[in-house]
Length: 275
Image 1 (cartoon, rainbow, N blue to C red):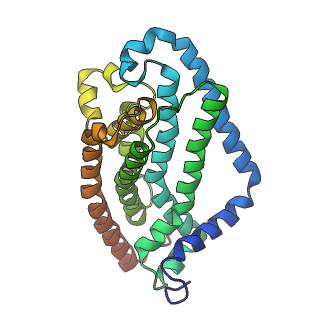
Image 2 (cartoon, one colour):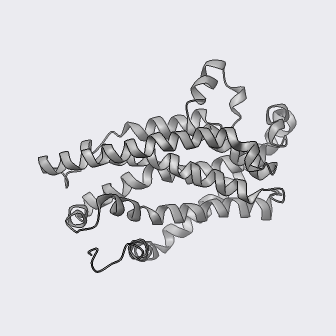
Image 3 (tube, rainbow, N blue to C red):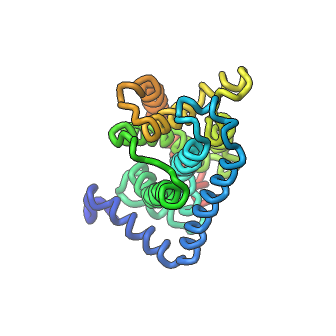
């Protein structure tokens, strides 16, 4: 594969076709993932019934019901998690299969390879998010009629840019150090614990609320819930969107620089294929 043979516009479709062909050969895996999504929605629906009205005061800003709150949380946490892991996973897979160094030997820019290799996980994650919402609406009374689609798209785009910065930083760590990636733990695990995925941030102790304010997921989920459940316009979400944009403006250039530096070090040391 070379830039002379494949234009920059066609390159993403080449990677998507390759990854789709691989995914198509594992049909049972696709079925299990779909069933897993259904069972997850099913489980949280009954947890919501157990919680009942007791959570209403904490969820007043989102309509007072726990099930819509947690459904959006688990759906978009999965999607945003891809932003953290897709880049490093694509490199890891390339190292294991021996294709990573071969791709880097082509005239294609390493960043283009990294991004295009991660398109399929993002696309499949988008399918899973849609599946969460469709299942919730079809079987469990989840209402999306008030959703502001412009606000949803704005939050989604700026969040993906923000989390892609963390994802590329994770990829840089994998290239340089192979294992023990701290980025996934800090940005992923701590975000799930403190970012408001399963419960509102307001119920956390004050010190943990301050820690939560340092995580982009906190702003992303708050804005997404308001956009879907309350139909909030973009202007009402300006504060959260600004914070996410600042995360992206700082994180993306820094992570691209560090990824390039990690790549150069790995080439000089001859460790690109080590894993």
